[in-house]
Amino acid sequence: MAARLFSQNSHPTAHPSSQELANRDVSGVNGHRQPFRVLCAVDASPPAAAAFEQALALSAHRGAQLVLVHAVSKDERYSWRAGERIAALAVLRKRAEALSVPIRVRVQQGDTAEIILLHARAQAPDLIVLGSHEPVGQSRVRFNSTSDRVVRAASCPVLLVPRMLTRFIPAFRRVVCAIDLSSRSPGMITNVSSVVEDSRNVAFLHVFRDTGRRRFGRSVVPEPASPNALAVGQQLHLLVDTHHSGSEAVISVTSKRIDDEILRVASEREADLIVVGATRDTRLRRRLLGSTALKVSRRSPVPVLVLPAVYVKRELSALDEAALGWAA
Image (cartoon, rainbow, N blue to C red; front, top):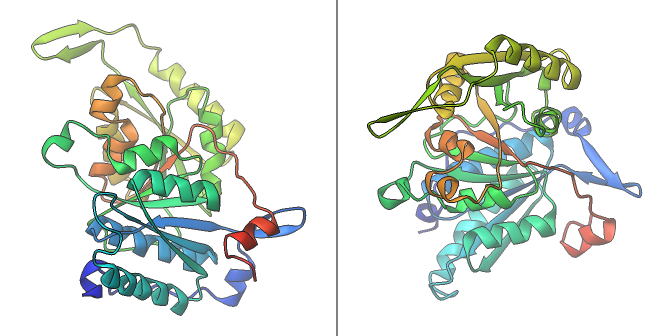
């Protein structure tokens, strides 16, 4: 029964060497060293199974601590299928322990997104990992899903893993980061390196829509005049050179939708990770149709990293760590 609740991938994750573990990034408060921490939401779905595999691969490679969060639906009794749930989570724990990954498992009843965000606030992870999938039925129109809610409210980067992913990469080597040249772009460029180990492999992409018309049904409505593509390209290169010297700046001029073009460029460059920015926009159109980040993640064959508008790493004291069960 347990094997059916949380499906597992047969591809083993490589052990990090002792030298690799020694070189992992750590930070601290008052001399307290805090390892990289990954929070992963798990349940019985294929997207969650893929998310666990990717989270485990990243954690093993980076010598990170792994927190598994499972939310029991508030519409069912907490004791329903509890034995199967306990056995399944024990299997995941053993897989992490076999790779020397420190792990904690948290189970709580309530709304899934709220439970994930609650534990994210308590654990102060460097990264949240969730499963992503193509919506069906009414959810194709109404995108207010668990992942959408977490992405909008999370204060740390969120990695969305497609359900069909079969190759789980411990360190991303070919990264496309889409930026919009807004006031938040410098922060995005800087924060990419908080999750992507070798940021020299990041190509920063800006999609410039070269169209003076937008179609609404059968009507064609003129758009306001756009800046010259050449000037936009110069702005992009200056921004990247200032905040991430040595990385590649790519401008794509298109009449397509922005999410379509991001996916096309990522496929053309054989990217193994796409990075986009989150939005906290709650306007009706955004809530119904979804943000560019969520549109990209639902169709991307590779993981999508969503960076928050503002990201300041919250460090925990040794006392906080002990209270959360991380004391040595």
